[in-house]
Image (cartoon, rainbow, N blue to C red; front, top):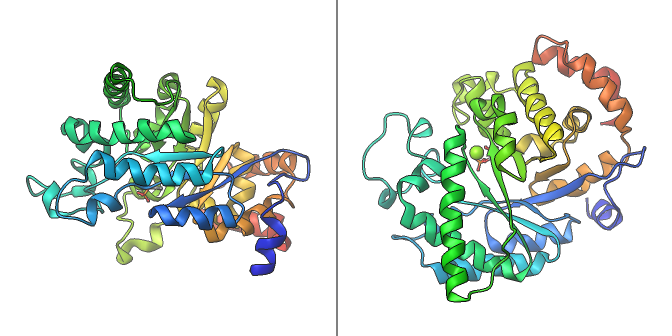
Length: 325
Ligand code: PEP
Ligand code: MG
């Protein structure tokens, strides 16, 4: 692995037919940014920001958030850092957040729903993110969007925060890129509508698989149904990719599915512009991209889309790309 890292980390992730793909890292702790850089990542595709909230007994202060975000942004500059706003509750819960018990927390007051319900908590984080944007290349990403109203409301609050920073004379990047995670089936289906509101999509397959096939992503009794290559999942991804391409919106993926090279012919064939993964996977994925022909992958995807089961998709992959992986 060490040899692969040093060989591949400086090379571009470019297909045989010359198309570049951005290979990015997912991080949770600010210090993980070093691993992304050292593994040759082209930026941070997902900075999960829950840790600073879960590791203490009350909400963090704006300055504490800002310090951590700025650290990450400065290390990666001029490469992009995609900071995802708070995705708490659901599977990432801590007592001081909860004002009530929920029977189905992953279907409850989670992520963007929680933030829109607690605008003060949301504004504090948005201020910290915008302030950090003055130190490098920051993008903002909203998690768990299920309807377009949520995007509009989140953007309206972001605008308020930006205006108050401007009044104070605090520096920030005014034309910061704003994107959403596509991880709820309704968002994938409505991607053409959502595309009019944002600069990029990032597909969160961990939740998209959970919600589209109705299986708890942490329940081993139904884990046989957790299949990234299920045709239902692939069709949803295609819908997002097609809508993004048509509307000129970047189409990225930051779920676990993006970090397994086996999935590359399908993901690149569908048109992902950027893949984000745990830092250790970056050299492996980069290396695999360098042996793929994109035109061929696009043809391959047409056959994939005719399959009826995940096993058929896997069989097709083995047949066409077996020797590669
Ligand atoms: C996802 O759902 O794919 C994702 C990247 O978000 P998380 O794993 O943090 O829910
Ligand atoms: Mg998710």
